[in-house]
Image (tube, rainbow, N blue to C red; front, side, top):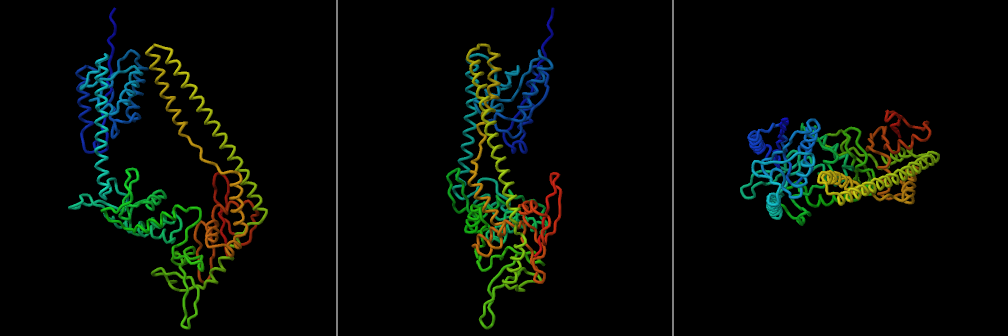
Length: 531
């Protein structure tokens, strides 16, 4: 009786380690051709090619390798008697790390397949295994040496004042006869960023969302087809390269003057960092005068730019405190509004936001209930995570005992594969961190402070410090109110947090206009106030 010849399927695995090799080189094509020619010479049936693009040989988790392993399982499930061989051009193409090399090989062999290469003969003998280890170790050594050389060159360049990495938006490289690649401001982006950073420094742009809106407006005015996100603004505000300086703590490179050109001063950068670090209360402008707390916080009704303020002196030496718009081209430019007029109108506007005691008590009860629920959910999540971690740890212990008690290579391979999966799960559970929670006392103190401000905003504004006034303002208004010299503040939009708390009380509140929008099947009022 003749046995049916076993069919051998070949899975080709070419790999290059960088995107540049993918775009500029032909490494994948040449590797594919060599492995294909090898498979044909062995009369294998080439089933599929798995080109791994831009993935370093030091990684275990690789997209195409995962697909290859799944393909092996599918072939074995469909044709259990078939032979499957994974072919790669060279040991260096398979892996550049000794441990990763044998881990990947074990995954392949554990699924009933094997590996071959036209440039290396894998022998299941002491000499063959030793040779394989030496070659894999040599590949790892070469990778580490190449990496070290690259890092050393980049570090040396950084120490000499050159930025060795990609440049952020707003800077671009040009060729310089002495410095080679040389960074300069990339206008008009650089000019827009400079104005935005200085506006944030001077508190003309109070929040980072204000900075986003400013840059979007500048892009639109200048016909620039770019997007800017809140994350992009955060990176822009913390980018020291814009000062002409560089630093890289990871390589112990302290702040130093770079050879490139910046577009903001180092003093501006430092001031912005101070503002960002103190996020608990709004920073005031560098030229803020407690005499004019609304400067920069109220907008001109015609140009929608913030009012400034100062004391004006008459011909007889009398000084008058005034607010005014100084925007070029605005019809209201330098038309003064007496401080008493605009600030009394603001107090009237602020007075309409006062919350009644029953609403305060209801809000406090709801907040306490939500706090208790969150505390319970937090404790449940901690307990559930610990239980799962204990279960995985116990499973690892059981498998370890089984491996120690068996000599069956098939079972050992199966157990080790399962053990690796459990090890990954354990690492994931170990990496889960639960941040420190506020205590109930801290929560109660913070809640009381917030509700006190909402209950007596006018009193806080009149009797508090400049920082207290800013706290009142930003707690009540998401958008800066607009002021008209003839009609006053008109309609101002309250912050969403105040809206939600007000909605707990009576709907019949004087001087309130309400718009509604559907959100998660609930109607949450968008409250507008008129002075």
